[in-house]
Image: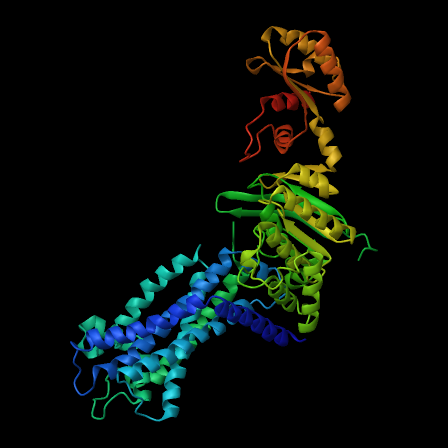
Length: 267
Length: 340
């Protein structure tokens, strides 16, 4: 086998192992899928009655925001999985094997995409029940889902890097809560960014969570005709802007993480 | 590889610091092919650090090593192809079954799907794990997990094997089982570096022993050589009446290898006497006999084997770090005797 074939083999073996783990501990999956349902229903019925956005039903506005928030939180699974493997010594076992140095992390981030795919399916079904509709073409809608997954995949590399520095999986949950909550709230996810006060508005306009949300809304056809074009560049070009962020995040955090994995210091 | 005489493991001047803590301080090691080296030391002596460095998990601050002909610094990938590692904490995936664990490792050694399957089956049989093979490892006992972890390190039949405290935390029966397995491996010609906190384990399994403390080798030799250095077995006598101490002391002195009264250590507060003995159990029988005929009442008497504590006291003059046993002042006296 060539070294590329080795790498592909190693990634596949690690991803397969993670998938087996997902099927063996179905409790995790149940909560992964229940919490987005809860979010859709909570926001639709609690906020939905008090927030009014001109020209559009709030539920229609909301769904893309919840999608973006949920897949962003999906990065936590990657971080928690890596932190747990480190704590249990599995990472050291892998590191002593003649396998590709990137395979454990690439295999992990790839297999975790399953969580986001499943939660997007469940959320879409729940969304349809509460009145959300895809009003554009199916192809565009698929593009929207793909963009959400791409962005979430990039974020999972940030969490992978963080996980290689923490002593236990619990730390990851707190860390991701601290980072991802503000990122997904100081954005156009649940309220239009125009309504936010000065600095928060600027942050929200340049926040990639906003651009991925905006792109999804456009691709799902959830922005009614006659809505004025956003003035901020990221929101006027949300697909490009989201893709740039995704590529940059992976370009920075993939090599950093693999390097950290290779040299992990321990006592 | 057995035909040439270059060592299977050769390390020079390995050093590693973690902040202010010196974990390794210029450690040299050499293991010939097919031999077993026991790295003996208390917790925190640097054993795991040494194994981590030699298995490429950790980069040393300085020093160099060659494992099975591959240079650690420049060919770490080649080193990983030629070694097996079983760590201190059984690193098996609890959610996977025993069989899945072994197959996964086989595929990561690039054995190919079919070969990995066959190898897993072979190892499950050899380690008597066939009944539990298709159950998640979560339900395995401590001994079964260690066996599975050990099996994992053997998947590629690597010429050099590192076992980091393979029996720590095991019950006595599991420990004996694991010893048998390790003996079989060695009989097959595997070169083995084994770390342990237990003198007895090193004694049972290793050809050569390196005692390390604070990251440095403080003694090297075979088990017999080290024991001789410690003064071998000693007789411990506790008498009932303090008034008999002097008589008991001169009685014991006659049975020491040197015959000198100074070699008998007396601790009046506990009415205890400690003395090196020349002929073990025969001496014990003779002493009991003479104590009886001299009407010296005895509370307790026995032969005491050297412990890891004794090794440390003998070699460093300090008690072993974090040892669970209380310090024995008699051994300090022994040090002085030996050094004199």
